[in-house]
Length: 328
Image (tube, rainbow, N blue to C red):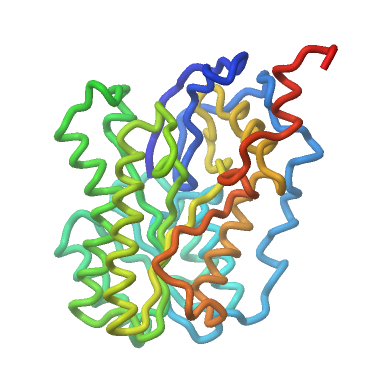
């Protein structure tokens, strides 16, 4: 979970698109405004119930066990994954860092999904060993799926630019946001805590491949996260047929503060650049469940874009119209 700061909201020229979209698990400090040229049109906003939990309920994960990290409140993707996994028949453990648990509403989610909560610092090997041992014990066996939804940058939070990083904070960014996946899979592998044929999904962002200047050192962390996914995916796939993938999600309206200044404008810009529009958090949860299910047994070591087509679209008429005169 990264906590970001306010940035420039100017959208007058393409070269001034200096606002960084949020990764799916980002928590913001302020509500966004809707005063921007690319503010999301009302007809492109996904209905709240369109991808809701009740849209499936087919027993897709019936009998499966899992661990879900990073559920802070009702706006987070991890929260929606937990609700949907519960509706689809899964049993799971919820976990987050103790400080995040104090900030969030995880007890409410635990009550509605009947899930035990095991606090764990994802940068602490002893905590992770305890997490997996206790999860296996409470769930009655190794887990079939694991969601990694963890990210944080002190440099971003404290306003340090990429050309003036605090390197101790930089190491913390990499540890929390990327190395934590390696630590989790290493801890799980040592105690055989993930079942044969299981599935691991980590949430990432397109800044791992493209430059979004204000995303700062989190871009490096996401690139490392995706590399770790491939490396562990090979090893766990070869030895235990366990799949490991990342999902690169659209800019997502996450929590009570979805917004650094200008976020609503970029959200609308990304939507206008995406043939299908921005993918909402609920749809991302559905995609994660598909990857947890037995229908994707041969999908592994992939970075899967779940962004309505944004990642492969060069330009759209809606965006071009903002920069063309009336004679065009």
